[in-house]
Amino acid sequence: MAERRKTIQLDAIRTAVLEAGRPLSIAEILEESTKSVPSISLRTVYRVIRKLEEEEEITAVTLPSQPDRYESSKAAAKHHHHFHCTKCDRLFDVDGCPGRLKQLIPDGFVLKEHDLTLRGLCASCA
Image (cartoon, rainbow, N blue to C red):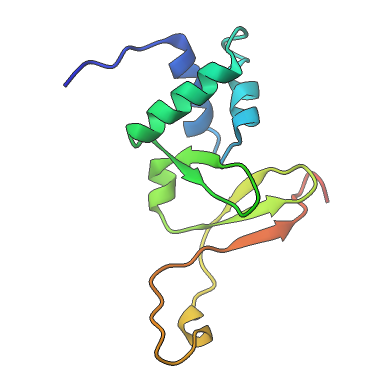
């Protein structure tokens, strides 16, 4: 196995995503990363995000009609949902699950998985 080349850009991007506590957009990752590496470019962010996904350190969070957001794979492995602020466009983790979803599906159907995204205003925007 080849040793991964460690760079300050990679460290800044990894730290931004892994320590955010919520899924981040590419723009948020760039903004956070430039605090420690002011010269970091958008191209570098995309390249490193792709690498971190391939190495399964981070996972994409997909929303309909929205660009992907990214969170740690450790966070993604724990079943949770998201809250999307429609004003600031940030995404937040929501712990727990409403449950009883099997009651909603038609007879004879088998529920394999589900996604739930709540939308509204975050505490900062409300």
